[in-house]
Every structure is written in C-alpha cells, then in structure tokens.
Image 1: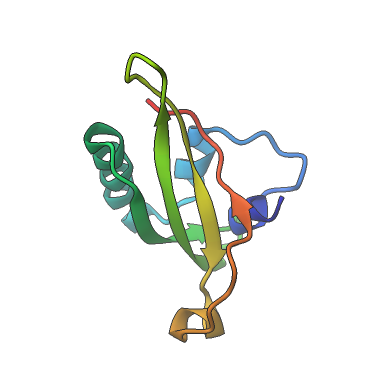
Image 2: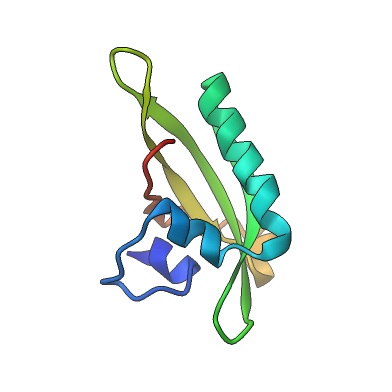
Length: 107
C-alpha cells in the first residue's frame, strides 16, 4: 500500500492510529490530533497537510482528506480517507493523484 510508504513503513507492516501519530513530525502531532478529533465530533471531513518522519530524520509532506464513518447509533467506527505525497514538485501545484486509502479506527 502506498500510504504505508508515506509513513516510512514496509508494505506488510501493521498500522494503527498510534503508528500514524508516532510517524508524524512532532510539531504537527497536536494540530493533526485536533483536526481529526474535530472532524469526528462535528461529523465533518478533514483536509490537512503534515510531515512524516523516518528513523533517519528524512521528512515527507503529506496531504490527507478523509472522514469518519459511523454506525446506526451514530458512534464513530472508522476513520478513512486518501493521502498524497506533496513533497517537492507536487507541493507547488503538480496535482498528484490520491494514492491510497488511510487506515484507522475512530476513537
């Protein structure tokens, strides 16, 4: 899955919401947590940009658009979306296509 590449993970890696936050740039974590939480609470989509960081310090800029899926009782069940790497030429309007659905459970 290409989305795993955005987070510097192998294609067979297990991914949880904790993995997602661990791979975010420390300066972006709280802002992204707030955006996701607000999206879940307000039942709105999110559209954010953030950096992911490899163990060796390399960074990628990622744009993510997604939303929460709810059960019949209105409880959040899944948080899903698409991501693009926008590092380099894409960041200045290169228009890269979305590459993969995100992963994660709401909550």
